[in-house]
Structure formats: structure tokens, C-alpha cells
Length: 287
Image (cartoon, rainbow, N blue to C red; front, side, top):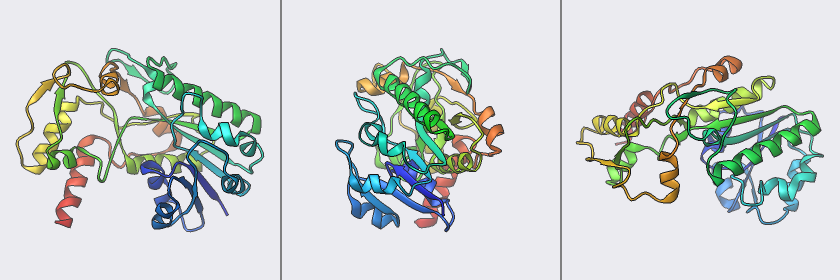
């Protein structure tokens, strides 16, 4: 029986597990075990600060390993404490959820799955080092590995519709700026497709088909809600945090063509319009 062990059982990992068949066993690391039980999976407490005997035991049963926790200043916290356990586990597949931030800035130009990473901030440099660490583990075990570099994740409970309704959404505009996004259901679908095709990749892009200006997404969300969008403001006037500013310091269009071809995958939500329209309809249905 296949057994998925997810290091970090958050928003994206839950979407992966939701589409797996009944034959799968799913275990996820969480900060509070009761949270995993509520989600219907086996939970193991792991905060990344020390080795967990329960997690080491789970690795003896895991056939598939998904890592969805970020690295810290010392590297991947799971590898730090469980690297030797991983090297003994009966794994058939390893997946690492990374970020398109590893490509840095391309002045609005296109990057694809073969583009060399050029990270420009410490957060993205750590991600790239973690990717390389997992590739090394996979090579040492002769196990297929997929690095899935994700765009901005949105979906139920996390989208512009929610923020507009709460009065917290801003319409920030920077000339020429675009971002790629990905609906969380497509994150789940892409990971499951990668599990089914271990020879694909190894670098995959979890992004939509249309890089778009962030202010356009806000305007469309407001249209769906039948409200006036918030006034447009500049990046300079937005008072963004250093992390927020780092996103606007990088501008690129990320292609997913090779990913879709190698996985035989069709996005359920090809652009933000399909994704937001479906989310708005779901909210109306619950009203």
C-alpha cells in the first residue's frame, strides 16, 4: 500500500492528500497532532528543532515523501534531524515544494524549466540550497525526485475575494509588473501527476498560464463581487514590509509548457479568472 509522508501538512499538502485514492495511507507533520486528526490523517508533531522518534518510525513505512516546509538559516530542518532516516526509508519518490523565486529578476522576461536559477535574496538562496540537498539525497538513493517551483498560491479562504470582503485588499500597481499564480487544487493535481510519472521533470513549474499584473486581479475580483475596487496605489506608497518589497523587486513570466507536457496535465484553473470565478460561485452557493 502506498504511504505518503508529508513534511508539513499545510494548505498545499492537504490539497495533495485530498485527491489521493482510498488505497493511500497519509501521514503529515503538524505542530498540533489534534489538527491532523481533524483532517482525517495521521499526524506527527514536528517543529524542526529536534529529531522525532515517531517521525523516524513513520519513515520506515513511507513510500512517497513530500517536503513542504521552508528551510531555515541552517538548511532543511527535516534533513538536519532525519537525514539518516531518509537514507534508510523504502522510498519510491521524493517531491519538494519550492518557489519560482529562485529565478530572481528577469525584467519581465520569460523563464522556463531549463532556466538556470539566479536567486537574489537570502530566502530564495536558502530554497535553492534545499533543492540541491534533496537532489543529492535522491541521487544517493537512486530515487526519483521532483522539484516543484510554485507561484503565488491561492484558493478557498486565501484569495482577493476574501480580502476585498474584509476590506484589507489593496490595489498596488507597478508599471510592467506581473506575477504568476497557482490555484491550490492545481498544486495538488500537479503533485499527484508527478507521483504517477516519476520519470517527468525533474524541475516542474506550478504556475498558471497567464502571468498578470496584480492590480488587474484585484479589479476582476471586485467585479465578481459587484463592488468598486480599491484605489490604485504605487509600491512606494504601499508601505510594504521588506518581504513584500522583495516580491516587487523581481519581475518575470514563468512558463509551464514543459511541465504540462511531461506530466500530461491540464490545469483546472488556467488563469486567475477561472479560479476566482469558481471561488466566487462557491461562496454564493454557501450564502
